[in-house]
Image (cartoon, rainbow, N blue to C red; front, side, top):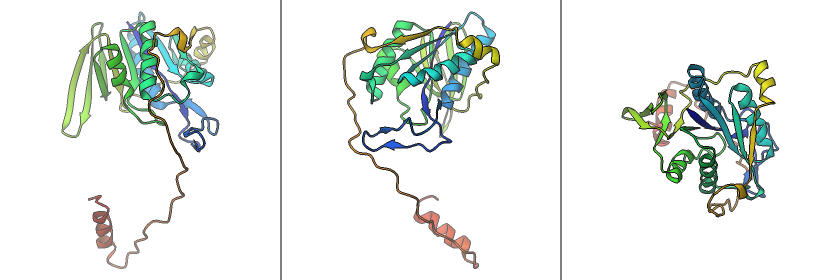
Length: 255
């Protein structure tokens, strides 16, 4: 089985994340860059399959600037077999439509039985990419899975909803997205870090992909920093604190 895992390099959530108000894009230089945690969990799903079936091939794929190669190297150190890095100046500021078109072309070129992604990244939080890829590739998609089971021909999973849980399945090839309910990722071993340097990383540019020619169709027209927080409402318990708190929550439509 060949599994592609989509990896995204994002600003570290523990650092001060900023938006470049001149371009409307995330200022990726202003903070540390790391693999998105949900991407690591997606990789763990693939590596767990590889643990039980050594014939499984795990390919990590990302689209991003040259610095995104660091995220691929870490994923290779964790256990992935090879990597694909899509990088091109023409992709700067790509929206979900353009991103899905390009990644679908790269996935089609690479070939796969299963493509795994996180349900949403911590920077964009769009959550639409897996479904868009499925549309481009004409494949079934099982999204927002809290549990995943795999065999040679089928992927199964469980999705939680407000009314309960739903059991889903699809024949391979297919696309899935997973939630943070899946297990934490493993750490890269020293041996993994050393061997990662020798694993192949395929670099792809736009003119090497059979992707439809298009520009980003959604652009940021204006951006501004979030204003500093103001002091909240202070409730002093003089015997009426519970009632005041209930009134406050009701007024804010939180109860």
